[in-house]
Amino acid sequence: MISCRRTNEHRESDMSGNTDLDKVLGLLEGWRDEMVQVQVELVKRPALGPDNGGAGEWERARYLEQLVRGWGLSVEHLDAPDERVAEGTRPNLVVRLAGDKTSPAVWVMAHMDVVPAGPESEWKTPPFEAVVKDGRIFGRGVEDNQQGLVSSLFALRALKEANVTPPTDVALLLVSDEETGNRYGIEYVLENRPDLVGPSDIVVVPDSGNSDGTMLEVAEKTILWVKFVIEGKQVHASMPQLGLNAHRVSAMLVCRLDEELRKKFSGTDPVFDPPSSTFEPTKREANVDNVNTIPGKEVLFFDCRI
Ligand SMILES: [Zn+2]
Image (cartoon, rainbow, N blue to C red; front, side, top):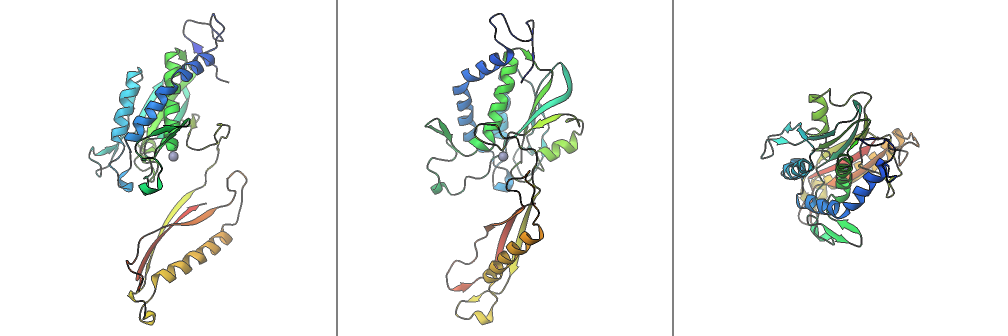
């Protein structure tokens, strides 16, 4: 239950019996098309980090900043230096609505970057051109993490426009680099502004859940990405005895790791879904071009959640 103070009016309801919550929810319902439009605009600005071959998050950050300032909210920058992008930094934005008290603040953190679209042939609609169809929006990033980002932004706007003063500060933290390690995002922010998020603050991260919003995740596994480089000896496929087939070795390695890691990390905890650790062979780099060459090198990756 949200309890808020409404400037110059009764705490619980106004003359027509509307509570602050009614008012906020009414505003949000009225902004439905506008929210869809913001999603469409965000999809046009891909925000791929340099580790994913992109130009970073600035185009998207500038759009969001202009939008938020237009609503009368202020934006603070905590940009992280990164020479790989044209602007020289990766943007991290704080949008804060003052409450009756500043602490403990309620934070909502969303990330601006997206993952690459993958092969376009696998898409039924263009990945970076949002399509609205059957009550849904299709485009790269609309779910991860734009749904969380857009809904949080409009929630803050609704509190402001309804003249609701929350009991404590409510702040949004819009970060870069969530998809490729957080170094230029939340890690940079926490290292450089240790005062920003207090130990008793509440932090909500709308980046996972179920369709009706009833799931609240309270634990997350530790992630470990491992790259394996297998060096063999490349030879013609008719003379395998002269070489060392890196492909075969990597296949055996994957099977062995799959078995051993499951045995070693066999513990389960129902707080996680799935309850056990996972060790998944994922990416493999292309090896030889032709079918009659034994590859002399294999590069493969594991995604582990422990
Ligand atoms: Zn995400």
